[in-house]
Image (cartoon, rainbow, N blue to C red; front, side, top):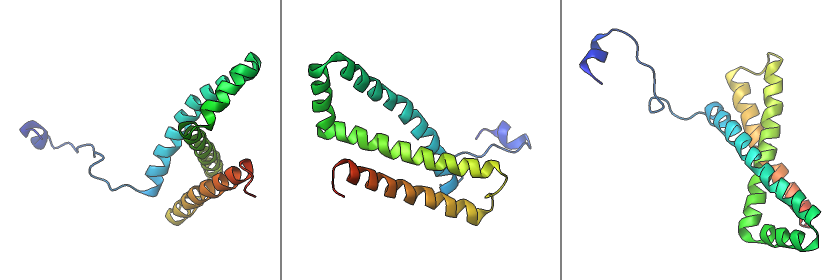
Length: 132
C-alpha cells in the first residue's frame, strides 16, 4: 500500500484475501459457474440433436464419444451443474419471498442444496445406467 493511500483517511475496499470462504459466498460463485457450464453444455445437446438428424453414422459417432470416459465425465458434470443450478434457483425463489435470510437458514438451505445435488445426481445416474 502506498503512503498516499495510508494517509488519505478513506476506507480501503476489502479484498478476497481479507475474508475466509463462507458457504453463502461459495454457493453464489458456484451458481454463476454452473450457469456458464450449462450454457456451454447446451453445445453438447445441440451436437446430439444434429447427430440424430444426421443419421445413424453421425449418431453412432456421437455415442462413441459420449460413451468414453471423458464423455461420461462431461455428462456427469452437466448433470451435477443442472441439478445444482435447479436446486439453488429454487432457493433463490424462496429468498424472493423475503424469507430465509437468517444466518442459520442460509446455512441450512445451502447444505440442503449441496446434499440434494449429490442425491439427485446419484439417483439419476443409477436410473440411467439401470442400477436401480
